[in-house]
Picture 1 (cartoon, rainbow, N blue to C red):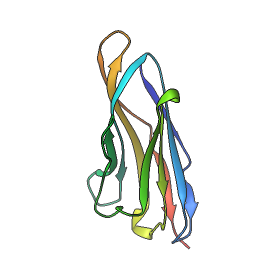
Picture 2: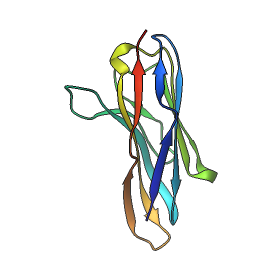
Picture 3: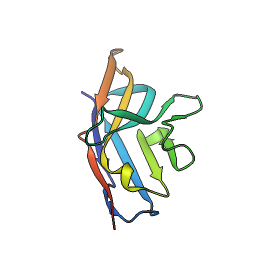
Picture 4: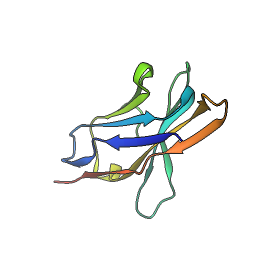
Amino acid sequence: QVRLEESGGGLVQPGGSLRLSCEASGPILRIERMGWYRDIPGKQRELVATMASGNTPDYGDSVKGRFIISRDAANHRISLRMNNLRPDDTGVYYCHLAGVTRQIRGFDAWGQGVQVTVSR
C-alpha cells in the first residue's frame, strides 16, 4: 500500500514563505502524476499545482508565479515551495500521487493534509 506523509505546514505572516514536503512509501514502481490540492473554507477542493512525470507543471491561477512544485524522484518525495503567501492561501493542503506499484497495479494516493495559515 502506498502511503504519503506531508510536513511543513504552519503559521506564516503575509508575504512570507513555506515549503511543504510529501514523502511516499510503499511498493512504488513508477510515479506518473503528482500534485498539491487545497481545501479552503467555503470552497471546493482546488488544484494548487500538478505535474505529470517528465512534463511541465500546471498551476492554479491564484498561485501562478508564487508557488513551485518539484520532485525528488530518487526518494519519492515532492515539494511545494510557497512564496509571497496571502491570507487567502490559508487552508488544508493535500499531496496527491498516482502511478504504478511493483505489483503492476495502479495506485492513487492522498496525504492526510497539512494546515497552512497565513495571518498577522
